Length: 82
Image (cartoon, rainbow, N blue to C red; front, side):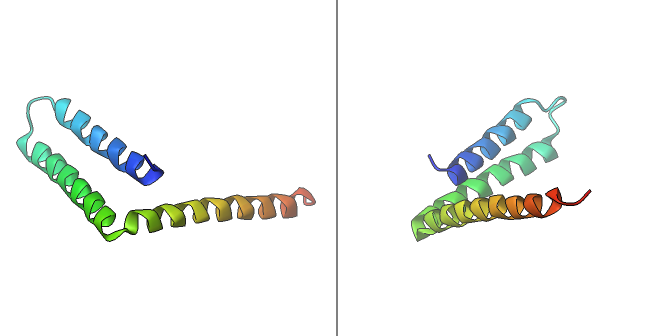
């Protein structure tokens, strides 16, 4: 499972947990959380069908690599300063 799928699965699990933990059965909150879960699943399935899940994963990896490079550059420039 890639990071995007894992994140979506974690979000869905969190939503289901929130529904399970609703004290007093707040129906409006439960409907909203269920709808968010449905939308998340639909988005994930649509992205997979369009082949976008691979592109999003590649972009996420690229951004992670760039953020590490930026942090290193900032760190090396600020070491000389006091």
